[in-house]
Image 1: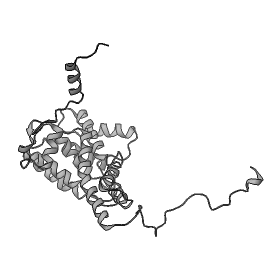
Image 2 (image 1 turned 60 degrees about the vertical axis):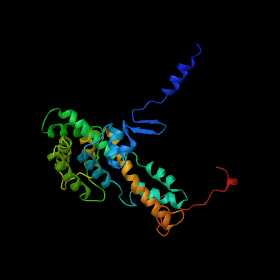
Image 3 (image 1 turned 90 degrees about the vertical axis):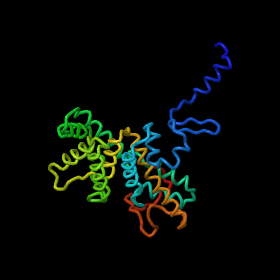
Image 4 (image 1 turned 180 degrees about the horizontal axis):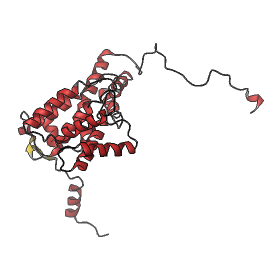
Length: 282
């Protein structure tokens, strides 16, 4: 192999990492081309999230819609595993950053992944529907495919705790207002409502859209990829995780498990028995 010239080595090193996100030079920082000193004080955090992920600054109304979804997902109490993990981690001696990392790591497909999965569902329905104004037929076809593949619970609909998720109606109202103002197309809102209607067929009780289903509509309407939808949810929930970790640190307490020692867990193994005498053999 021919020895590389210094200029080639320098070019190779400089191209090892390439990014369109940030440009830094001594005394200068620009995000997606915008000087940081102009962003500070003029762009809120949701707008910054949008800029970093989409590459352009959002309209104010888009930023407000994104902010509403992020506010709604901040916390759901210590019975949410991510929140309880953060508190237990602190009680075991972890600092706040360790508690946050532990909690965020449990936000996977079952706890934390419903929003992304719902966005994938909506996207498949949108592809099936094509240019059709009414997505009902596409909804039926896609739900049938998912059921045939083994899906029993559709992400984004129903809630184990709330008969009606109190966050959903408010976000839907904001979505309707945004659609009326031309901020979003409303296509994914129609798909979400069509899924809700389809799931209610033949049921004694409706299966209403929950926070994940409505957030999936908002993130889809704003043009985010499904995997980014999960990332945005994690950004939001990280605030609640931080708050609970810090509160637990102030409260104190050592090695707090998922339930107090006074409440025993259920053992369903073999009854107490003696160890065989090894001298008697098998």
